[in-house]
Image 1 (tube, rainbow, N blue to C red):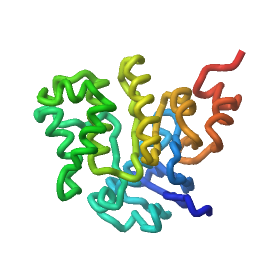
Image 2 (cartoon, one colour):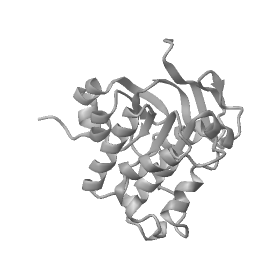
Image 3 (tube, rainbow, N blue to C red):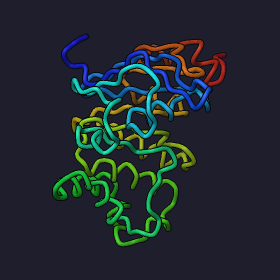
Image 4 (cartoon, rainbow, N blue to C red):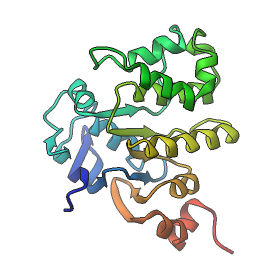
Length: 239
């Protein structure tokens, strides 16, 4: 294992009752990378993310971040270690304003970092324009920007992004993916779960393909993008 490995999963198993959702997966993320986990609905992508955040407990295996074993920690400690999670379905607080939602993202910090807030508003100017507006009145794409912004307020070293393009107009998907690249440029390592395989692989350094709880393929993103198996399963057949 090289020195720049920030995060590893080894032989992870997760079950819902008697149903095995994750069947012994292993993966690694190096500092500064964008790594994507691809797969169809029900493949176990969101379960993997929720287990990293300790919202679900693993049945077996190890999850390590900067040498810390995460499987024994409560969820709030994960944030303090430097991992932030932008969940599937956005989960913004609709009755709070945009800015109040962002402030909640900084709860693990003693005080809000004004530089971080400024940076989020620079990346997502719509959020600044609507900062006094109730989050429930935003469009789906704007709520996704808010969910990502909120998860950056804790100044994470690693960001978990779960399905950022889900249910969003294509033009906003493009804007959001552009900003994920910018987040990475600013030194945040990104683990991205995404159904839009093409967009994710164009953005990522490396990828893992999950099929019913197991890793079926992994490798550099450019190789996966060119792979016949990926083309057939996710991108429509090559002609």
